[in-house]
Image (cartoon, rainbow, N blue to C red; front, side, top):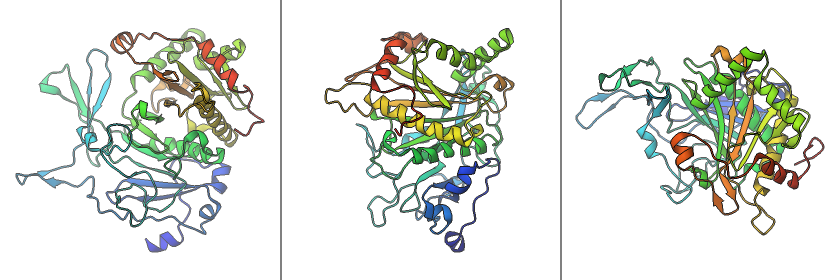
Length: 429
């Protein structure tokens, strides 16, 4: 291990194919945390990329093996337990359940249960020594979530049983995977203020993990996403995102697949391609554009601030299929979108706000044959409807999933147009 820390060889993932840029400007270094979880550094600093400097690979904590059996208070050996999921007989939706998540530390908001920051780089001598990062610095880091809502237990095959023995209620192991991506070591940094070069490394992390997770047994959908802001319910105040690898197709994706497949069978076309080009023809809801990506307010937007982002090139089903130029274009587009999102609501001082948002990557499913007629897209939204108001999901939205909008897509787009030019190819923001 010591020799590996001094001179680690360049990591060769099993399925992820590095781009030309990644091969020379980003270094992926793998290790394991002390309880056995996988951990990856993605470095973009030249000294670490070259190997002149190397990251700390030894987790100083003494955590129990996450898959080890334990003895209960009565002396019985208890094997590791997988989170479960149950199927709703009314909708067919699978609902993962893991009570252990109630024990996860919360360091942000009114319900704080812990001090310190487990996503910050390790600080030798600090009274808070339960951080998830082995090293005293990093650029971007990816690791398995310590409190996952889905998890694969080695040697445990998913088995369908029935709650109370009744076939109305199927139950299986929630045999997925949950990972965390730390965008930057600075716990006070905002994703909107990160340099485009760092966001380019984040894009590479999305591509890397999408490619690798898609080959885990039983995985059906890879979902990179970002929850940002206290109002969203973020439990850790640090610039980060997550990736869920679902052992099922989630309800929203299932609905989109039904529509994209039906559209293809009826017209022979690709619905997401045609939506993008219809928005380009309409023009008024296009809010950002560079030579590889287009951002628009969808014509039937639900949220008071909602933007969809799509690649220009056809045939892209998932993030790992993007070429170098498209990954750079995405980093620029994401930076501009976050900046303008923060400026969207006028707080009276001209400075905007730290916008609460959810950024959700919709990728083609891993195995479902309908994937061929899907198309990669990002769906970005905020439930803030004014500088001092939140859109709460009341009876119609929560009870019947029947959305009622407090604005119009055209007004959302108009506000974006006031914040800066649509074409951003020649801009550095």
